[in-house]
Length: 306
Ligand code: NAP
View 1 (cartoon, rainbow, N blue to C red):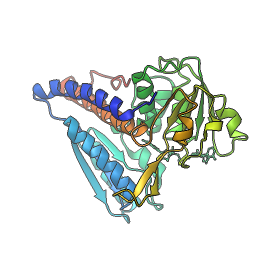
View 2: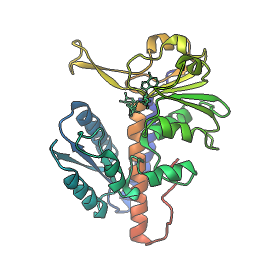
View 3: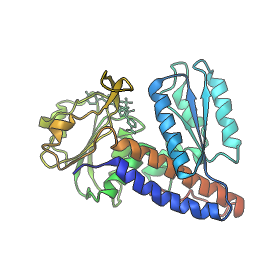
View 4: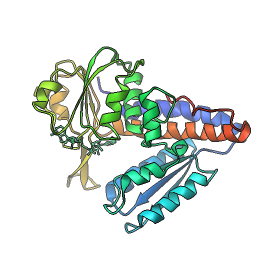
């Protein structure tokens, strides 16, 4: 089965739009997502564009704060603080990676957790760990939504995650161990120091790969019948393409599709689900902001995420 993230995201976005339209009919303002983009990295600009396009399609207001490459840490933090204080801004995302002179961790900590729609702030990650309502990090949340959309039963299964980044590998490994419908897995989290990686991947009923190395996972590393989620997204020069590049995943799709039971394509697998999750988190942030305005303090917790 092809786990088509484009189809799943379109269907979920349609439902979200219907919910939003009810709010707009009541005269409420639209949710507002602000993306901060530093410098001129082509891939980052493309990802931000895709996020903004999705906002427009669903009826969200979106703003890109495009800052020069040499923006200082202090200037960037000042922009974030201003957005934290702005009642018309529901969600803030800072597109990663950042230029080398910026301390990424400080940037993540500066975003108000109530507007942290990427779900990277430790307060939100901590809440996710102990299963409190929160903004789940967008890509792991998108993976959960995709598994749910295609009714993949993961409970009790052995999941192997390859890559332990703070934005994908580590959070998805935690989320899949939680006592939840899309959870209750036994998880092995692997990284570049893991010995005999293939002995682990071959035991996976659910294999999630997020390392950024094109076609790294080959068919011989996959258990027959496994479900494979390929998060990897690398631009490879391709003269045949108008853009001049192709997007390639971490899994050798052609080989893997012959042995697994289900697999995500690249592109149009995890990518659109990440964007949907960002929209959903922004909507949750907006609802909380609206509640604050109408019934001040009525909601102690952010809305349920999933
Ligand atoms: P990252 O920060 O680039 O880190 C890569 C991870 O892979 C690290 O944990 C590293 O281990 C591990 N790794 C590298 N080589 C390995 C090997 N040979 N065996 C096992 N593990 C290895 O990760 P990321 O930010 O999660 O990005 C990973 C990929 O996913 C990239 O291609 C990125 O573009 C893509 N991505 C896609 C989306 C989407 O929406 N589709 C979202 C986010 C990321 P160490 O920790 O030991 O160094």
